[in-house]
Amino acid sequence: MIPDAVPPTSSGAPLEASFRDPSGVLFKSSGQLYRQVNRVYQEHYTHLMDSGLYQELMDAGYLIPHGEVEVPPVIPGPAWKVIQPEFVDFISYPYEWSFSQLKDAALLTLQLQKRALAYGMWLKDSSAYNIQFQRGRPVLIDSLSFEIYTEGQPWIAYRQFCQHFLAPLALMARRDVRLGQLLRIYIDGIPLDLASRLLPWQTRLELPLLLHLHLHAASQQRFAGQAVRSESTINKNAMFGLADNLESAVRRLKWSPGGTAWGDYYDTHNYTPAALQQKSQLVADFIQHIQPRQVWDFGANTGLFSRLAAAAQIPTLSFDIDPSAVEQNYLQCRLQDEQFILPLLLDLANPSPGLGWHNRERSALIERGPTDAVLALALVHHLAIANNVPLERIADFLQQCGHWLVIEFVPKHDPQVQRLLVARQDIFSDYTQQGFEAAFSRYFTIHRTEHLPESERVLYLMEKH
Amino acid sequence: MRLQMLTLLAYLDPGSGSFILQLILAALLGGAFVLKSYWKKIVASIRRLFKRGPEDEEN
Image (tube, rainbow over all chains, first blue to last red; front, side, top):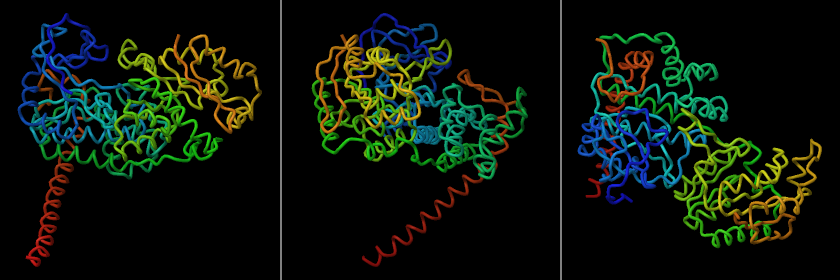
């Protein structure tokens, strides 16, 4: 998968999220992604490549592979070299991950730190945004994160690790899993004083959380803005010990999915076995007909229908609003070593926006598309009735997300829709099959209309005009 | 000694409190790590000892 050298092309543009680290810059040129390595990083890059660390990380699958290429740098002044990293199928963000995805990313970061220390290097940053899920596994995508180790110095990325990983994981495990969403507000991780205030008092009795969160927050407050003057230093054993202690802190944090509205959805919903079988067959047929390069499955629950696409080796994003469903989906991926499915947390009524500097560091969901095919199964009633989104606006949104659409219409007398209407007035006079088809026909051509047996539900295959 | 960034690459603000806490924890975590390493070695050698026993008997 290492790209071959490509001939020199005209310089491209730096990526919006790539400006903080002076070691180098990511840029796009002629549709390809490259990373410029600056002279200031030369010694460290050489050590990474020549010490055996790069090869060890390749063998372990911990770091994205890259090749050195003859492409003009995007900022020639400080440039030394240009490398081309392997392409990551889809960039996802920590606030879109389930508990175990964030935990696995944290454990990978600590493994990287330990392996680097063994080769005389360490991580100079520990941002959760440097980790991506590629073929089902977390991987470090920033090849310039390693720095030659300086004996005696504290770890510069310690605070960042606690803010990006330990604080959200502790809040999710010990207070409420939904607090992971604080990562969407605090782009450089959850402030430790806030985490300390939000965590239950009993977490002060857990030594790693006491040290790395509560005392850490207190220490930050006590020494804020002061220069550090100390006769003491921190040796390499202590540095290994720090990584080791953080690792045991992360490992001890556990969260079990369950007890939500969706956990047992497939068992209790209103399909007969024949209808479910027919629906699966139709979705598989539609996917086979479309032959998409990528699928986005909205409202995927634990990924039953996502797996129809993934089984055909199509990279599939399996989005759901429920942290339990996404967690179960991810645990299944991990257990089965599934490489073509990526479960992600997403509230379609409020999808991930553009965040960070200039609103451009972290892309909005829609900017990370469009995809080839969207699945929207047993979803439209949640958007139209639970969220009052007019059908035409749903159609408009979905046509921006992908070219093909496999969508299920759930009629008003369906028990699932009746459940949504039980405590409220039915103000949805347009919510009929005719109204649905009229709204979607404005944006899509309807190729197939299939009534599911023993059900009033209808499955459509549509293509954007 | 005044601890400071030794290279131009240190683009993160490590935070004074985070640095000082690490220096305070250094002895504790370093000691714990060394003890853990020794303990692992002891456990490994005991395991080897017991493993070798039955193999020797077989031989």
